[in-house]
Length: 261
Ligand SMILES: NC(=O)c1ccc[n+]([C@@H]2O[C@H](COP(=O)([O-])OP(=O)(O)OC[C@H]3O[C@@H](n4cnc5c(N)ncnc54)[C@H](OP(=O)(O)O)[C@@H]3O)[C@@H](O)[C@H]2O)c1
Image (cartoon, rainbow, N blue to C red; front, side, top):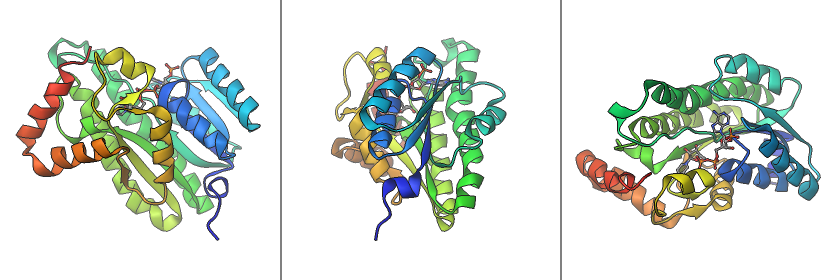
C-alpha cells in the first residue's frame, strides 16, 4: 500500500518563507494533508494570521517564528527551532530578487541575494539532511526558476542563485534517494504572488496561481529531480535549455526581464 503523504513527509514540515504568496500556498497544501507546520518569515503578524487560518481550517498544529533567513547565525537558529520536532519535510521558498542593472545595484543587495537564495537553502538542506537520513524517510523542496536556466539581464544575481538551487537539488536528489529522502526542485515560470505583482509590469505567458505550483511541486516529491509546473513553462524550458544556443537563450530571456520594474 502507498504510504499517506503525512506518514512519509510528516508529522511536521518546516516552510521557510511562509507568510504570503507561494510560501503560504505550500503551508496550506501541507495543512490540507494533515502535516503540522513550523512557519518562518520575517513579519510575525502576517505569519500569525496565516497560522490562525490554517489551524481553523485544518485543525493541525502550527508554530511560527519570525526569522530573517539571511541572519549570520542561521545554522544555529535552524538547529534550535527544529530541535524536538519530528520533521519529515522542509520547503525552502523564500527568495530575494532585486531588479535592475547589476553595476548600479548596491553591493549589499547583491550579497543579500546570495545570503537568502544560496546560503539559506544550503544551510537549510544541510540541517535537515542528516535528520531525514536518520529517520529513513522525508523530503526537501527547493525553489528554482526558469530564470536560472541561463544568464538573465537585470536579475543576474537572482538568476545565478536559482541555478544554484537547481544544481544543488539535483545532486541531493540522487544522493539522498537511497536513504528514503526525496528531493525536488520546482523550476517555476511566473507565479501570481504579491512579490511578482510588484515586480512585473504584466504577467508572463504561462503564469500560474501559487496553489497550482505548490500542488504540482508536492505531487512531484518521490519523482523529481526537477518539476516544471505548467505546459507553457515546460515548453519554455525545453526551448531555452535544449533548442537555443546559450547566446540565443540569454537574448530571449532578456526580452522578458527588460519589462521588470
Ligand atoms: N513569483 C514568481 O513569479 C516566481 C517565479 C519563479 C520562481 N519563483 C520562486 O518562488 C519562490 C517564492 O516566490 P515569491 O518571491 O513570489 O515569494 P512568495 O512566496 O510569494 O513570498 C516570499 C516569502 O518569503 C519570505 N521571505 C522573503 N525573504 C525572507 C527572508 N530574508 N527571511 C525570511 N523570510 C523571507 C516572505 O515573508 P516576509 O516578507 O514576511 O519575510 C514571504 O513569506 C522564490 O523562491 C522565487 O525565487 C517565483
